[in-house]
Image (spheres, rainbow, N blue to C red):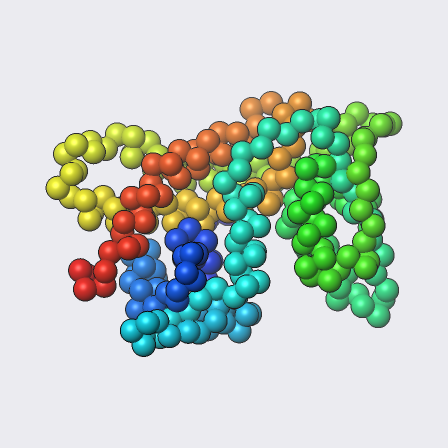
Length: 282
């Protein structure tokens, strides 16, 4: 499936990359339109996406010091982005000795909407399905899972356990049942197909000759970085980060993580220079 960078997703990615200022100052609507315009999103689409994010309680309208209309992140949105940082930018070295965390849940029929929410949230945390009502993930996800379920007030329906897989099926074969590894690998391959050529292009650019074209370079860096981040930030949730010995040969996850890490190192700060460019300089 081809990548789809929706306006709403790009706004969330923009705030995650550049919108969390220490003073929590609002980002002017005009700036949002400029920054999303560089990604090919028109102003009406930006305003529509912002309205949806506001209705969801993720963005809060607030005036800038100059009186311009703007938006800040809600406390919930900031927490979600802070939690996401640990997944998106960290490169853990998973070990089989870390064990597993099990989530066993039971939801009354009268509250079945919470059953759907629970399954959806566990799936988004990277859990696989070991059996009906029994979900499993690498042990290192225990704290994040506990924190997330409590924040969503779902903890009353769930028991969490940690432990080892002792059989009877070989663990690597069991893992292939618990997760759809082919689908996860396809996501990594899709990311690589879209963004590995971008990295190679930046490696071939003559940065010395581009010193007098800083604006163009920074604009390109900003655009390429935001698109890569918008694609990548979902992958560490779809892929729980399983130990290498449990994965098929030639697993593409490490390669895609390396491509993103190099793009982040190479482009993030140059993109920030574009973000911080005053509107009057346009």
